Image (cartoon, rainbow over all chains, first blue to last red):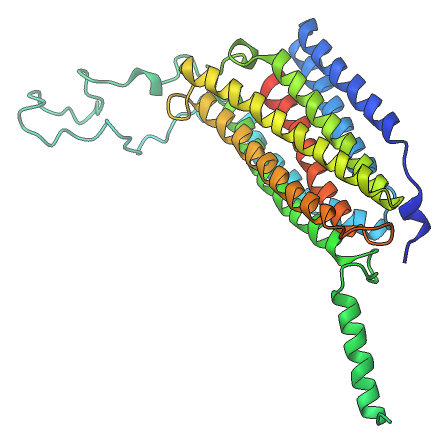
Length: 144
Length: 209
């Protein structure tokens, strides 16, 4: 059964030219050296527009029954959940300080008697000889 | 001389066969082959979404991340993007050729689509060789790991797509498709456009931003 929707052919060359123009615009924005936020926002918007054009017209999503589009688009909610869940890690570039009682690799108590001759001080656990400097963010007033 | 029970059984068998025949309509959409491909593509989209999200998290939480264009070549990859978009156009031309019953056009445009995919892979292989000889590898940096995993996963899809198109082309050469029977061509088109769509996102997020 050939429905009318199947034979209503979209303007493929028009979609092609739109994709081409958007690609050139993306590369143009890239070479313009805009401020970072403006560049990222415009690139993401253009990429999503291109993806939408391909899905809607090349993949005929706009011309199929509405139910198919609902089935296809609904799993993208899961993608949104992934993105939102990872946002704290990806956006807030906070200095990470482990809790006080955690023992990190390389910070174990020296078990070998010959390696560390100095008596372990109960107040200061950090050994002065091989302290890892990267794990202490310098100026962080917050208690977190 | 079929009894009513037998007749009902035959009717049931007929509807079952109809439901399993990809050329026949299903209540949801013109055919189930298309729905199955869409479901596969959405699960595939989840894989790419996971990879892209991991890339974003690793990159944004790492203050020492390099500017991608200082390592990767944007003009060559922009050309590659253009080639993949063109191959999507030849793919829709192949589908619309067979919808009009044009066998020669179908074969020509399927071959052109395969050529586009192969060219894409060739340029990507050249790029990878160049980057690896410059010292960018999966093991040496997180930048290299995310770059090769993302573009490699996509490249595997392009390769599979070329093989898939080859299967459809050989079936077309045997005259399997006609103006009333072209669902498989449309389904391979869905896969191919999806690969194009993913590349649009990868190009933007990995190369440009």
